[in-house]
Amino acid sequence: MKTASSRITSKFQTTIPKVVRDNLKLSIQDTLNWEVEEDKIIVRTHKNNFLHYKNSIKTGSGSITADRELAHSKRTEKYR
Image (cartoon, rainbow, N blue to C red; front, top):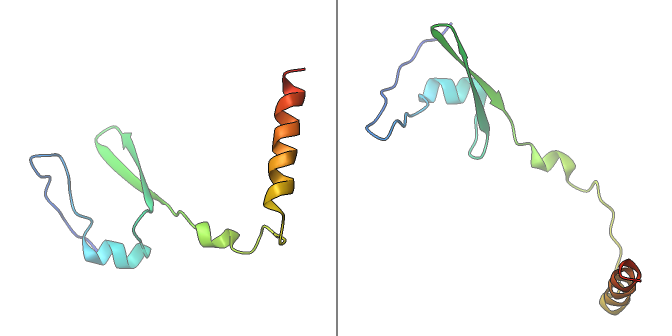
């Protein structure tokens, strides 16, 4: 088990030590979930793996005019 420490600033911010970032493969925009359990703080990671969804939505060439007309007809149906 590797240990590391960091200080809390006057704005109650802290830096995640490099050894921890590297070990957990943390990246910008990852989320940390904080839990308090009696006198302990448990920090768990939540990865924002948006690239997992790459190419999962298939798109075609489409038609802007047809899409606008469809949206317009849907709006007018809503108010009938």
